[in-house]
Length: 255
Image 1 (cartoon, helix red, strand yellow):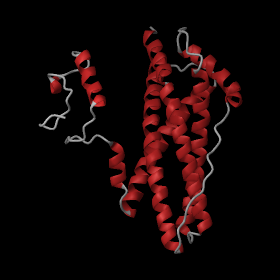
Image 2 (cartoon, one colour; image 1 turned 180 degrees about the vertical axis):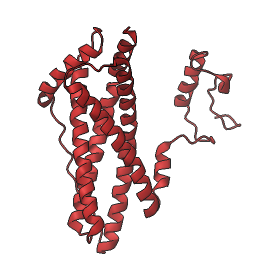
Image 3 (cartoon, rainbow, N blue to C red; image 1 turned 90 degrees about the vertical axis):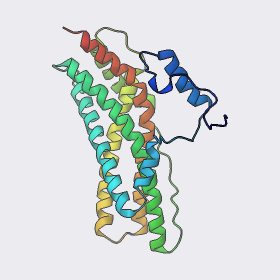
Image 4 (cartoon, rainbow, N blue to C red; image 1 turned 60 degrees about the horizontal axis):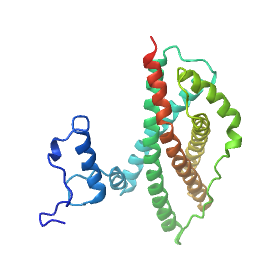
């Protein structure tokens, strides 16, 4: 490293670079950050650190968890509404607006799934600490990982999504994996919605009754299930980005 405490690799014109006007130099600047990651900066863009900082006390944990999961529920329900609208096999009356809505919903749900996974981990740790203090002994959760649904179980749903994808793509050849990804995301979104219902019911019981260890363990299990579902959904949603972009481009070409 240089004596002035900056990365050895720098691109001239740093702050004035633009991805459109200076694509090569801009890319080099990003790559330079990967070549020589450097922590000495006033910019702290890591949202995960912010999430952790929000959850340092019970009051802040409660407020932050309600806020994060509230946004997650909204984006999840928006995605499920999109799935239900397409399940009939009928194209939307306004394909362009619908394609925009679907693309935005995919992006939002991807981000909120990542955010929720972090929040749920922190919440589970805090709940375990509180339960251990309450019972006077360490409390650990030994949880089984939910088994992912097999591709064969999604075959019928994937066939329906293949027809929808061909319609929404305006004749452009869709990727062969997209219908299966859409079927998997439809399944996962339904699972997450059911898990949220179970969490709400159990949280209500614990809110109005003595927090029995068995109920705390049950709550931890549902929190873990939702974390697993969120983490499973993220790569599926990421893989669907070009699919929904194709829908949007196809809709834009329509008269």
